Length: 260
Image (tube, rainbow, N blue to C red):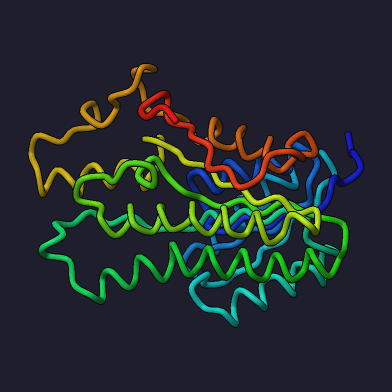
């Protein structure tokens, strides 16, 4: 049964994992969705686009390819979403990478790559979403992806942890700047989540420390890893009108691994 659209959202890094779960959840919530990832993930995006169209909600889906670390591509991606779907109401800056490495062995180039995608990419998404939302004059939601590693640094993930701490800072700063425009800015901070990225991280970390295991990284009162859909449920709230009085927050969804 078709429902009226709640607006348009753009989710970066949505070809798989948490980003995919967020895209499906927001489509079910009633948003038209723009799906972003890098060119190598285009086939996965097309599959997700079909899944969304087959939900039967009447919601539109658009593939918006682009590298979030490239400013012109982010600007063009936002412009294309607005042109095709009519506006931008929710930006979910989800794209990111998480390599495992000894800090003493990480090169400057490797460090820069993580910051380019995770930190610069999030900034550019915040920037161009804000420009568009201010222009529209109807408020909006900007949502970033921090991490449990952005609240307590994780072993063998110095660059990743640093970028996720940075996202908390830019989320708080943006919340102050954009509040007068009716735009809230928040972030979600997942713990260990059942995704390809999460599983691969454990495998990489095991090559650095044989004592690391999936079980050793659970370490929370819930006694398990989370599911992408559980992160998407939090993002659903942050994207909704129910979160009007919530801004500048980085909300944990980690099974209780860290208590805020």
